[in-house]
Length: 608
Image 1 (cartoon, one colour):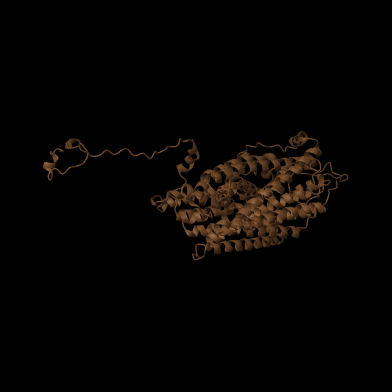
Image 2 (cartoon, rainbow, N blue to C red):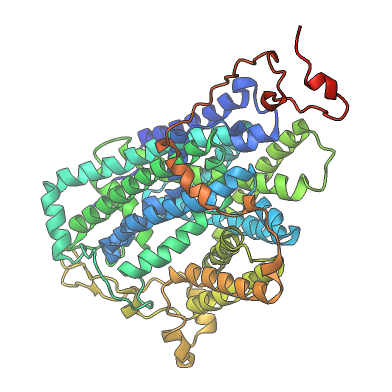
């Protein structure tokens, strides 16, 4: 089996994507008078409409990790991943109906500003620093990991791609602000859908129709949509995805600055909610595309797995391998797919840079330098975008040197989402929560979340918990040798495991507590934070405090969704005709109170 290679046309398509993205940034740097204030730069002047924001939210969700990783996930573990479609619906409803009304009403730029308004400035600073560290680490991986996967399969220049995408992304973020980020995301989501579509259409043609793809997937056990096993130790079941996935993704859509900053930049609350619900349709479409790519890949390689046959060294290289295999006769189309993967990188990184600039200006600069004008804050915001763009490129270089350890650190920092979700939930849903309870709840949530998370990285779960499906090389041209895989040998955290986990020291906790599904890490952190926070608040007088209702979710926030059903009451500005005071000599019928003692003779006097 021979696969194609990159041609000049592929590089042209990739270069065109970068050029158009940069041009959008230049346009919004000068359109409408440019970015005059920090509000214009960071929030688009709060004048965005629902559709572009919805597409931007979808694009940021669909990073290169999604483009390369989700099809490989379905290829290896089956289509049960598609239960996330229900999870996404729950996440969007919770974000739109619980968190959005409060954030939008307060008119905040940084979500962590809410923590100071509701609790105190120390919790605000905690949230800010955790977000900055977590986002920088994540962004470094998002830039480097897909570039490495594409380089090893396609020969696409590794550092040329990393530096080019980093510079272009920083360029349009610094010049155009949030409007440039949103509108480049709109363009890039189109590129991503085009890349997915090209793979799906060609795979259907190669396999002779969708029915064969579905039949091969069924025979190979890939159509495993329903698994109602309640065991929380299983990696993916209906319940782990529904419950654990909802908590995990609500921590991103509900409170993460990168997402919240865009939908509260809409011109009305209705537009903000609408952007989330339109985005849900986009999430479903992306999930369906990724599912079909994964099933098509299994149909094509069901009897000759490239990973087992050592033609690729990691699962995330399967999609680039498939593209070069089935699209080698179409110059420029492999470049379109690579452009779609890097569009995912650009959209995620640009959102992160803009969010990092926002929290730095709003949480770390503005409160302590009150004399700065809006014009100066706008220039500082642009400087912060340039700074964080450079830091993210540097983190990509660090990721190349640290490999497994950095990814282990990234997973650990990913667990901060659960306790932070618990902290915001305490503030918005519980009027008794006070600063002491919130702080102790946050510490308790982190402790439990990191305990199980670090343990899971040191003691990897057993194969019967992850349940990988069979792969085979029986149809490959490997002479008389064939191989099948029932247990994956890929260990992301090999360095950590070898260092800390000799086989003879595996404790009993490793097969129970540390084998908890990774989707429950966030759930655990959230619930511990909420429960501990409420208990401590009640013990420290939280029930006596008076909280401004604007910091809480109220029933009016929910009932306002149905305000258009109520008939409008029209109040007429009508004043009755005032009668003159005539013919009222009899005091019984006079509406004017009379002084009887002083005007006795006037009372009984008649008009002449």
